[in-house]
Image 1 (cartoon, rainbow, N blue to C red):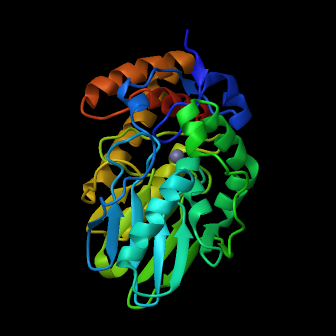
Image 2 (image 1 turned 45 degrees about the vertical axis):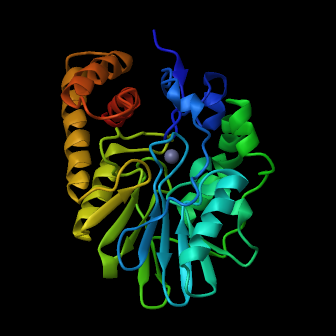
Length: 323
Ligand SMILES: [Zn+2]
């Protein structure tokens, strides 16, 4: 019998609050002890240059720390996912200022989860947040609940999130796509999904061939179906849209920088899960049995991938989609 808990990007949420997060359900597990030893704050002085206009502050595989993107044009700088809480935000702002060329400052989030958004608190008031309407809906429906839930998990996380009580109002809300001209480089900000969340957003830097894929495609990290709106079919459509961009480099919201094959790896995995779920459902297996069986089956099939616990939620979500 599994304890039901919620899973965010790099973290498992406390079971007592999972239903408050919009029926986020996945089987429980205990994170490795190392996950508790590392403070989830973006690391200063670790910025690397990926391409002509793109810099990255890597996550270092620390749970609740995202890969932070910094895209630099002659007029403005776009920060993608400024980390969790004021300390992360301050680090990201300092790192961004080291490489910035123009005065304009923008923030885009790959999705609404606290480790991707709440670093905004450290940014100056003139910073413009640009957000998809679907992601804004996620923020309004679930944003603060997730912040409170993260904070309830440990005093360390509570301290990191201290002072964050409300999300900023975006300067601009778009529906499907926003082309942001930073001066000599343009960021295509695209709402895809629902996959990991309802408001999944990716950013493509055409001039450099760099795609920030959010949690929709990551290197050797299993996908998290993290909200009630998560769907495998729209996740697959999102992967097709990412492939159509023909990126040369793909940077997931967590884990190492990858080549474009990471998109196909996610497609193969999700299609493989869909096929097996359909078979097991036809055989009369329950949703929970299917989740259990496929968690074990795909963990063995993908021995190098992290967080196999997420397979249970993926399988039960797909099971519910099949009618
Ligand atoms: Zn997430």
